[in-house]
Image (cartoon, rainbow, N blue to C red; front, side):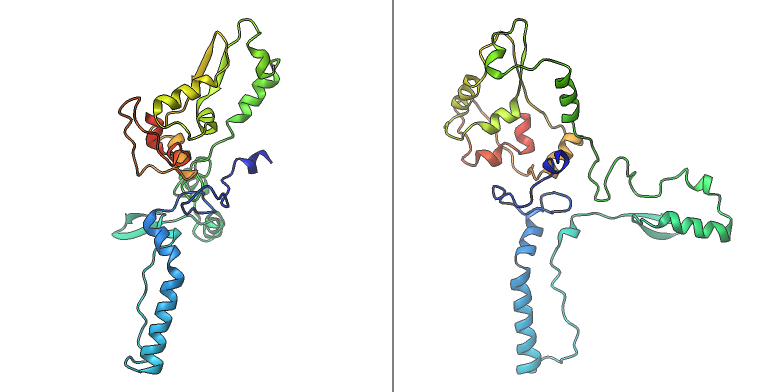
Amino acid sequence: MDTFSAFLNPFNTERKHLGCISSGQKVPEDIADDLLKVEDVGKKSFKEFVDTRLKDKTTRFHKPLTRTKLKTVGSVSKSTQIKSAKNVVKIKAERNIFGQLLVLSQEYHIDMEKVLKYPLSPVLWSLSSPGGLPLKTNKATLLHKLENTFNCFESQDVSRQPNTAYIINGNAQLHCLSSGPDTFKDLAKQAFRSLPQTTSVHFVTDTYKPYSIKSCECLRSGASKAKSYVLQGSATKVPKNFKEFLPMMETRKL
């Protein structure tokens, strides 16, 4: 159940953008527009077909139809091509490639030990999924192991424990805050007022660097990096769509 709980909920009503259920990635706006209007485009093409080929007969019935050229979720994936013996070959993953090699090795005496020194897929399955997303373990597993080795206290009792450091998940703390404050100064005050009154408090947040596992996970969860918000000072206004502002990758760099 922990694994399923970590997945993206495709039916989350708080998300306004369109996402791919299989990969969890946010669909670009141009592709989302094509997907949302595909029914209207289909009805328009059907009406045009009936009017021009059946009613008015201004167009030959057997004349080839014009493609609508609408983009789909498959348009997000990019194929890789290589040149081999002056021929362009598209690299793709096939689950039965190993079985094909076994059959061919019986007829052409292929050295399987030599063949298996090379990857059988565009990306190693131990590092990435077929969709190109990185594979990673649940980082909370280590936390739970550490929790089992120490005596845990209730939040209200921590301040009374000697030599105790309090570590706050800054990202989770900010997500729990309401969007009531008008400026970032008021938001900071509200965040620090919610911290426990102890001698040692660590307010830890994430920074998603480009081309890192964190940045890929941010894209997978549907966070947008298309927009940036400049924080000029404490008097800067907090965005009205505060919940959508927090997951943005550029926000992590503030």
